[in-house]
Length: 160
Ligand SMILES: Cc1cc2nc3c(=O)[nH]c(=O)nc-3n(C[C@H](O)[C@H](O)[C@H](O)COP(=O)(O)O)c2cc1C
Image (cartoon, rainbow, N blue to C red; front, side, top):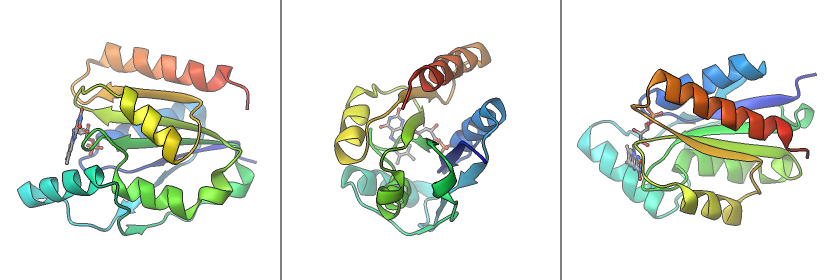
């Protein structure tokens, strides 16, 4: 029985890379929430920022993972407008009841804006977080590894 899963959203691949690294380190399967909204180019960028700021839920292709067998769910997303990205919001809303009482962690890929408000608003809208951090898109490899280590330590040390 798998005890955990990594679920991620990405626009340009950075969150995928983090999700796959976490998957290798934790031994958890990795699943992508596919974003069905066009997000390329300037228009896509503007649409993404606006939808995130408005806290919208937008269409996805759901990876349909079996959450009944896992006790830890690690979410990985890019940060848009300092918030939860709309495709992740859709997935969280669709699986809210299955996710309650599980250990939830959130790792963000971002350009470096402060993330304290994101943690507060995520926990207000969804669930308490066992581990939370952000890794900058342009972080050095050493910085990335150190952040991942802190994140994994928080995840492992926290009991349900
Ligand atoms: C619409 C939009 C809004 C963004 N807003 C923020 C932000 O508020 N703070 C930040 O640090 N980075 C912001 N970013 C940058 C992304 O979070 C960052 O480039 C991330 O690493 C991209 O991950 P991905 O390659 O998985 O899509 C934004 C990017 C986009 C497209």
